[in-house]
Image (cartoon, helix red, strand yellow):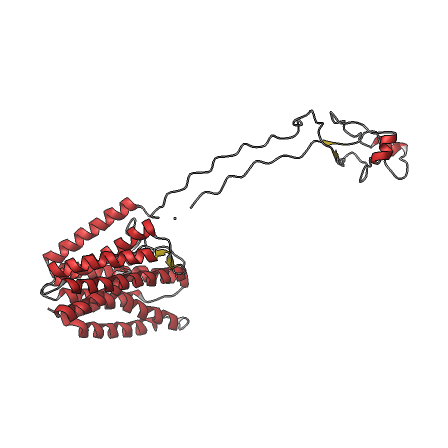
Length: 378
């Protein structure tokens, strides 16, 4: 799920250029000027405090020269000189700027609207829990809606950023059928629906020109596996006698893992976990995810899962932390390749539906398999 600077030091003041002056009354070297040229010469400015040189002093210091043609539109060069010792600062010399205080360090920021994120998260949790424990079919409908919206977000971003046109209609219809088949017929039904969805994608794309056919159907097959097929494992968890509690355990462990990673990483994170993929994730955050998920797993398997044991929950929590982190990194890779921050904007403070499913989808088959091994299919 969704993947902060000190101000620059103040610049010291500077001293402006020193006073400028020039020798006065010195004749230019070279051929003598005629009367006409003399009318166009510009008299050298008299600088206050400067001492005119002449006679023997000119011989000692060198005669002043005028460089360039002596016309009115030329700017006569000036000979810099130092101010007299009794002049602390020349009128033309700016005073040094006073040193500016260093800006206060900025506080760490979560990068999102935390209030909106919490509000949306609580609202989604209420809808999920209510549908989960009222009628199983209602929660099955929630899964289907999430799958269809997630497919729409993914295919839209692929077309916008990469000009890849994965066919949405067969993906949406096949994805919904996949979830229902997984609930009704288990893993066998899910695989059959997946195969038919892949075939539908290949045929649907044939109605358009052949250019880009291979990349479009490849993206379509990837989308079919990544979103609806992985979501069918949530539906298969639901079929057990304690199915709602299994799904609740699965969701709680995923959320707790993400929360632990965020809390510990934001407070103590210093060592990057995968800086090229997701610069915000740290090793300390991963340790937080593992610790939080293992504790939550022990509690959930002990009190929510029929015939579950606390040590099984420790292993379950460890596996969830690993799969959720890999899922988060996987979607970060996709978004980096697409050059986007979020997959959508439907959920304020979170992004899109896919930004919430990134760690849930790859965790679903892991939890389903481990629960089947530990306590059976129910």
